[in-house]
Image (cartoon, rainbow over the protein chains, first blue to last red):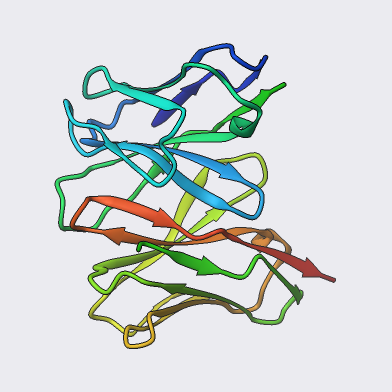
Length: 115
Length: 111
């Protein structure tokens, strides 16, 4: 059972470089999320997509863009990486539909370092 | 605004009970969750409580919800070394279909 798959697992970038983090889920979920995890800050929501074709900003969207390519895939792009974006990034998905119980399924994370 | 707060660390002796606390600000919360993160892994749902309940028990886990004070707690009875992890409180904002997490409480177990 694949669940939520994130690539890559590790990445080192230089300041100013760009990259895209990929995420795919095979559970036919409607909603997908990108979080970043920093020590002492917990998980902070960057962007989410409540359904295919929609995306919305979370708590910390600056410096990021997202694309909900189709129902399965939700990518996160850093156009010009900054050291402040050094973090562990998690993709998650849930059944969605609004108003009811939501259980998030998480990928294993991407450790990103920006030098 | 939307906020979920927890203390960062908790240390307990093996066999004792652990109590992890959380406060939240959203007055329209429908579900509140506890997620567990083991080292090097993503989060996994541990348990949850619906907002019209004040207690939920699941084997060694007891969740207490005080909706008036917007306070949630997770009690782990007979804490074992395998319970060492980071525990996250989370709140479902149903109006926006998004889930907001607290900072996480790192639970360490002393022999």
